Picture 1 (cartoon, helix red, strand yellow):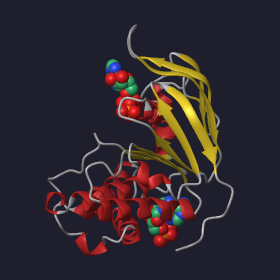
Picture 2 (tube, helix red, strand yellow):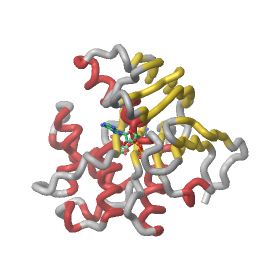
Picture 3 (cartoon, helix red, strand yellow):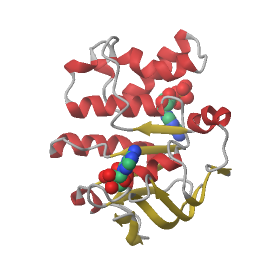
Length: 227
Ligand code: ADP
Ligand code: ADP
């Protein structure tokens, strides 16, 4: 579903964010991207969404070559992706429900259909009772779960989450991860970056980056025990 072949990314002559990355992610996998700040995790995620293009090598997402995709093709690619990035803040001028409805409205869904699906998405992240609240009145962890609801409301096949648990206490962070894992459980491919090693204990696949290189990568084949 996602393939990197000898991918490098230089932002400038002196800044190599990724170098010679080769990896593939199968449909339905849950992959953690680990490594210190500056390792290249968010650059890697951005390339999957064609927010950055490779300097060298090839990135294939759902059969599309990201380096060659035209700007006119970007909406089609992104419709298939649920993005949870720091820079995509919730809008403070409308309530939680309206924030989650927005991607559907943009795609031309009717209000009633958008509202029904947004409520279903909020229910899945456990925040239906906050539908009418202003986003800024929610805790950081709750806001992050609203972002997840907004990201998945279009039923994307792939979720990309860049440090979704940053700045959250342990309990809130666990809730955010559980919300992401619930979508993985129904077949959505998930890539989650984190510099927090504690989340990797229950992971089935982890790719460690440092200085733009994969320094370690493993898959656990033993099935996870359901909680
Ligand atoms: P991480 O997500 O692991 O913290 P990033 O992918 O954000 O790592 O950054 C990798 C490297 O690329 C860092 O050295 C960072 O400073 C640099 N970098 C990231 N984005 C840009 C940019 N837009 N322009 C220049 N350098 C960048
Ligand atoms: P719908 O009538 O829209 O199918 P559902 O109750 O089946 O409503 O799903 C509720 C929400 O679950 C969807 O609106 C969507 O936000 C979210 N979702 C996203 N991806 C998936 C998926 N692959 N499988 C199940 N639910 C998903």
